[in-house]
Length: 35
Image (cartoon, rainbow, N blue to C red):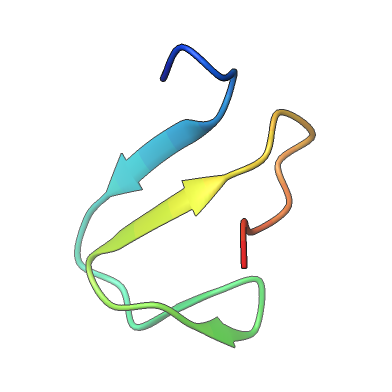
């Protein structure tokens, strides 16, 4: 978790919640993708 409450996730994936995102994604505190 980052100081602004956003979450970094990493792994072997090519999409997150149907949005293209390879290997790492940054999420808002509610779990939606930070775009």
